[in-house]
Length: 306
Image (cartoon, rainbow, N blue to C red; front, side, top):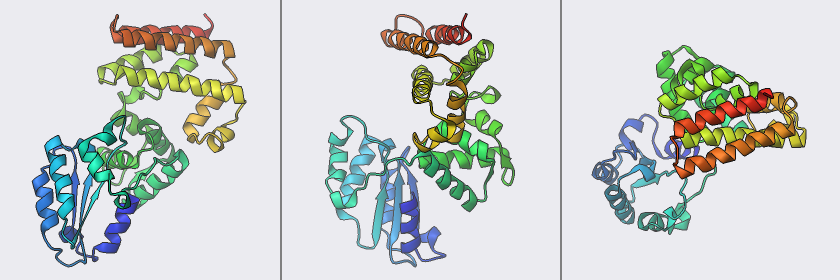
C-alpha cells in the first residue's frame, strides 16, 4: 500500500483525487463498474488510477472479467491489483496464471517484520490523526499479525469505536478484536503459562462463543509453547528475542518472563498434550470444544505441577 500511495501521489494531480482515483474492494465487487471507471479519461490528472484490493475475494466471474480487461486497459489509465498470499495450487489457476505471466507488472511483497510493522502503522496512525497508546499498538499487531492492509483496516475501525480524537487503549483492542475484556486468543497461552486455570477456561469459553476457530486457538497455544521452548533453549533475554528472533516487545516480554519459571520437562509435556489434541481435532472423534477445554485444563495442571 505504500507503493500504491506513492503511485497515486505521483500520477494524480493534487486536488483531483476524488475525480481520478478510484478504490474498489474485492469482496462483493461489481467488476463491470470497475471496468467502466477505468475506461473513462482522467478529469485533471495525467492518469486515472484504479485500485482493486483483495483480488482473491472477487467472485470467479468477476475475476475473469477483470483479467480480460487487463488486455485492453486504455493508455490514460492504470489498474493496480493487490492480492493476499496465494497458497498451494492457487498460482496454477487460470486467472492467476494469466496475471502472473506478465513478470514486469507483478511484485511479491513479504509481510514486514514486527519492528518494521510497528513503524509503518505508527506512521499511518499519525497521518490519519489517530491516537493509540504504544502498548495498544503492540497488542493490535500481536492479535492481527503483520499484514499492513488488515492492520490499517482494524486501526480505522478502532478509531470509530472509541470515537475520533479519543485515545485507543489496550482494552479497546481486546474488546473489538477478541473475546471482550477477558482478552483475545493471544492472551490464552499467557493465562495457561501463569497457571490461571479458571481465567484460561473462561477466556477459552468466550473465544468459542465468539466463533474463534478451534484450529486457530490450538495453533496459537502450540506456537506459544514452541517459542517458549526456543527461548529457554537459547536462554534468550527479552532484548535478544526482539533483536535476533524479530518478536514484538509484548511477545518477547511474555517469553522472557515464563521461560526461566517453567522446566524443560514441563514445556515438553505441554507440547506432548498439544500434539495429542491436534490429532484428536483432526480425527473428529470428539466435540472440538471438549478437546480444547480438556487441553487447557491439562496444560494448567502441568504448569502448576499438580
